Image (cartoon, rainbow, N blue to C red):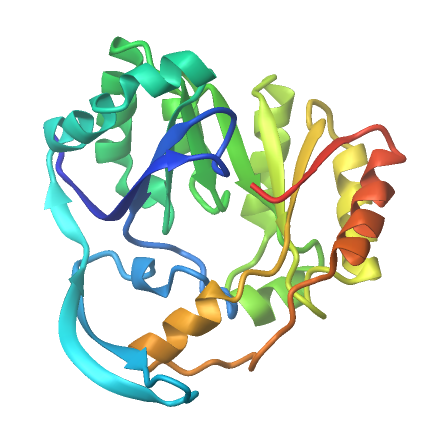
Length: 268
């Protein structure tokens, strides 16, 4: 049976789908988002990084020990962790979320774990960037209860510039999943001046109104965790420091979608 590489397991997660969940983070991602908040999940293989901590009272960092991100696990290894909190899934209508990185870059392992989860009666969610072969979505779609589908921007040129790949496959897969009737929670990360602009949100609204079965939207405020990680890992911050949106700004953006009949959540 296939093995996989994960870089984190988050228990008692409440922002990765309904209820209390366990979120498993798979290593490897086909995108290169400038604002990535899990840079340790980009590469497919385990990697050793020198992690640095801030000096007290200073914006400067000091070197610490090397730390390895990513470890090989079997399906049973991961299921052992998942089963520990089964009682919380039952009581809260929660379950398991597979995130990353991009879980679909480890298709054989993902497929095997999804099958094990369904055998145990667990609810499953897939947090995906959508950049994967359509046949891969077909292969696992019957094992996924709902998709947390990231949609960052519609303009393909800007998508290429900020994310490193075309968005055509991402949009096509979203249309395909919606036409097949899958439950989709659309997640829009709000990156200041890039994805949270009026023009981009208008483009997203126009696009999703042209397809069916997308009724739930999560607007994700900018998370400075990525900036902190880049500093800790000694990586270059291309965008520089950005400010998280105010609650008033978020409410205005949410109202834009709610006015068109969408169920909108700010965060997770």
